[in-house]
Image 1 (cartoon, one colour):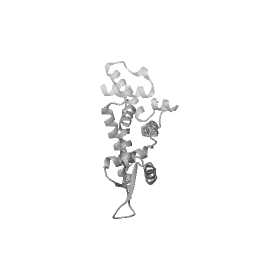
Image 2 (image 1 turned 90 degrees about the vertical axis):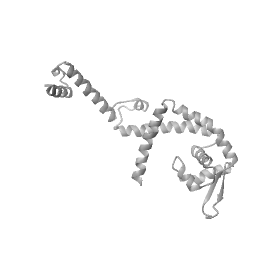
Image 3 (image 1 turned 60 degrees about the horizontal axis):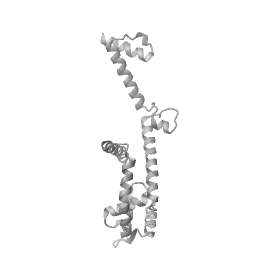
Image 4 (image 1 turned 90 degrees about the horizontal axis):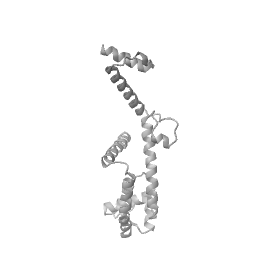
Length: 206
């Protein structure tokens, strides 16, 4: 009998014939379960219009939840790039240049330029140009490898370390500000999910 009620209730909801549904405790539970599942399915398929769609003034939801993930990530990255770009301009730096300074400070010894390039957050083929500009400002210095004259090593100068140290507090404050809408637990979870996303692509590329 219960199986029959479930079948009739589900069919009535699907066809829109709500008059056929008998209002019993069982059918009420069935209806609530089916409606909840339908909402979850719509959300997973990206059909429910949310804040991101409204911000982008989309007339309908995303075509898939994967599309929503990509767009949300790009939108967030754009906001972060804008905010940090403003901060770095106060020090006459770009984000990649600051990244080079942080890498060299963390290593505390000269590094081959190609190794610096491998450690950069953003992919770029112009690492030599980054180093050239920093060298002109006296923030880094270069020297040939004693064993292979084709290899250049780059290291942080005292002026470069002083500038990088002076930026620690405002950079950390901006980190906290742009993530202020998330708890620490949510931040850790987000990092894990993003690492899972790009590490999967790295495995495919390998």
